[in-house]
Length: 338
Ligand SMILES: [Zn+2]
Image (cartoon, protein in one colour):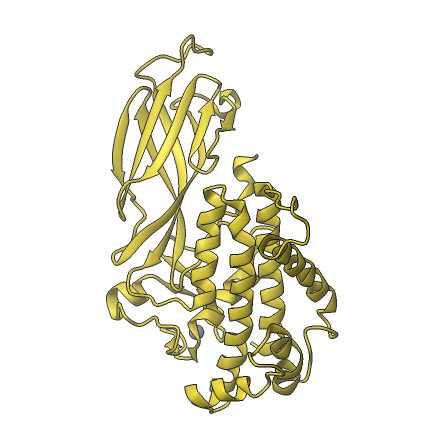
């Protein structure tokens, strides 16, 4: 597994959040929350852009930021309304364990995940840096030049601990006390934000994948998609003047059976709202791929073969994660014309 496999979401500036204003296309700054109004970001309230005063649904601004990323790099994105990600640098002597404040953490923010991105001996030219091989938890542990094991841990909501250990018979002349520079990315969330269910489910899927609990990730991802589909249509109806209750009732009116189903929304409800279905329109191919993932998920929950439970590997689940987000962005594109 390559340590550089996961996206580095660059905020554009150190203080930029993961929200892009749909009108002026500017990234909203963390200061918009920390200085002006810490409770400004709520899933059920439109957020007013500090630059152009356009009022928009926060989750649409998050989807707009995702649209700018490469389609294979959504895993690792800070999934929380108003969250961000930044690269941190620190240094530590070989053999030591230390706790550090996460330097890039803004006021009113909490660290969600940390990911090791690089390590090398201080004052050594780049051409002589030793290889960094991921260990069993590749997001937080790695071995530098087969000589120094490095591990990171999130200690509190604001601090991270870093430890380095020297193996017996180290190579490359590395000694106890040598200084190691460490790079890691920290994703953060806004303390007061209230995320919709699809984002909370994506957070849980992210944690499951990071813990190597690969069986639970896909059911979480499919549920996340289902909620995203509902909420995109719901927000569209809200924008057209319906209140919360009217929007929900309208969507419920598309149910063909006892409960509202994914297909009711992907076909009739979308056709009603935007004149195009997910199943046989521009995105029919993405929809067919998504349906394959639904089948894979069904094999986990309702197996047809008693020996069918296989544990997918992490890279496979990360690909599923990216594919689900790509299908979500198809829904977003059908619903909104920003
Ligand atoms: Zn704006």
